[in-house]
Length: 137
Image 1 (tube, rainbow, N blue to C red):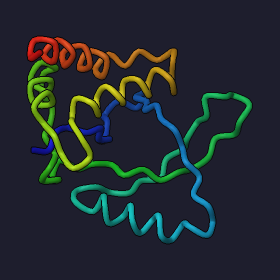
Image 2: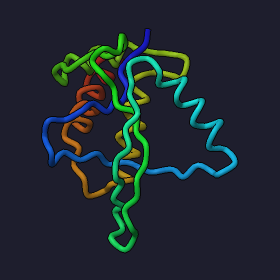
Image 3: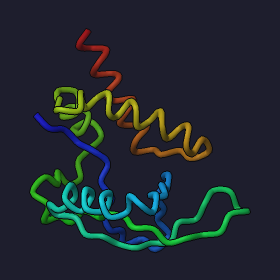
């Protein structure tokens, strides 16, 4: 019963931002890693090169590749209310584990990666899932 995962989608807002970590692939691994990612993200994703701006202003910006979802992706669940997403997430479990743990881990990682950023959507979802989780116990 697959759940929801973070998916980058195109934004109409030219000022929208995405916080994350950029990983440099070792030169000798570029082909294998790229082939693996291209296969994993083949179902309704397109590759896009964007400029990454490091949080540390002393570092230079650089280009990197992202996989952007399209609404044609058969697994794309689309927008929904926080409560509706929480109700879906609380019951989902896949080969990688429970969907609620995915959200809990993601929220924790965001607080570590970008401590000054308030991701209202993610943190509201986390709180809603915790409420549902508490009610189930």
